[in-house]
Amino acid sequence: MLDVMAMNMRTRNLSACWRMIAAVIGVTALTACSPQETGGAAAFAERAPQAATVGGAYLAYEHQVHITLDAAAIPARLQAAQQDCLSETHGACQILETSQQGGDYPWARLVVRLAPAGIEPMIAAASKDGEIGSRNTHAEDLAQVVRDNKVLRERLRRERERLLEFQQRRDLSVADMIALSQQLAQVDAQAQVAEQEAAQHQRRIETQKLTLDFRPPGRQKGDGEIRQALRDFRATLALGTAWTIRAVAFMIPLLAVIGALWWAIRRLRRRKAAP
Image (cartoon, rainbow, N blue to C red; front, top):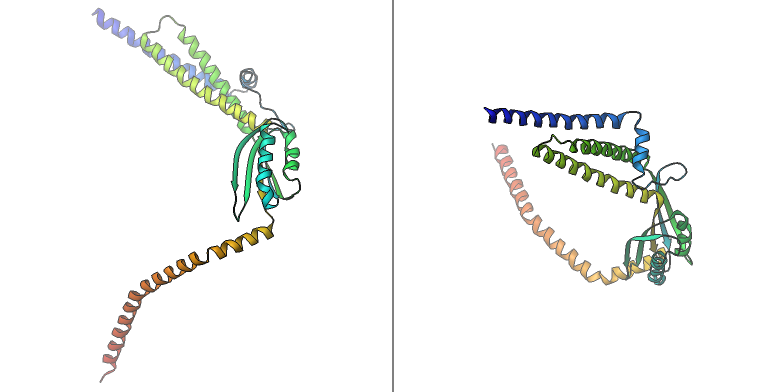
């Protein structure tokens, strides 16, 4: 009898604990959506890097510049641009991508992320003795993304505080403590992901992405294509001959079937026309 009563008491304690956890999550969700969340969000945001604004807006800028340069000068110019970024000649800079191709179709590409003040100086240095063929600037508005991330981090902070309060209770069983620890681990994992996203948003807003494409003039590119076509003449001729043979082989059975049908139809017409 005593064992049954003890088991019933443990069952009631466990049910009460789960109801408390559910209440914590519900209250946290309601407070996260309440109009008073702005002050709490600002307090929690102090734990994460604050995103900088450009002109009062959360904008992430990307620039793409096509530079026309003599083919022989492209490798040296790419190396110089890389060195400028590594030495932070135009401010804090990080290389994201570099690509290069030689031969008859030379080109190069450099993708960097650097401070806004260094964008124009780096473009000017990269296009020296060349021409800017085209330039495109794109800005992505991250205001809503930053706001949603801030609200998420505030909600997770409040949920974690409520769970820690319940964890301090001395009337919790081992099963209750395990359940609370699992819930805390989930909240901490979500908070870590949110913090990483906040840092990435800040990085995209405080710095700008610059893509430099180096290409030779159109005349040099056309001459290279002609030389490449002459070198590929034999290969192209062999490929065309092979495809012609395949086409003829494919057409032979088809023509045979068409011829047999035509002969059968003609013979049938002759029988009908005979008296």
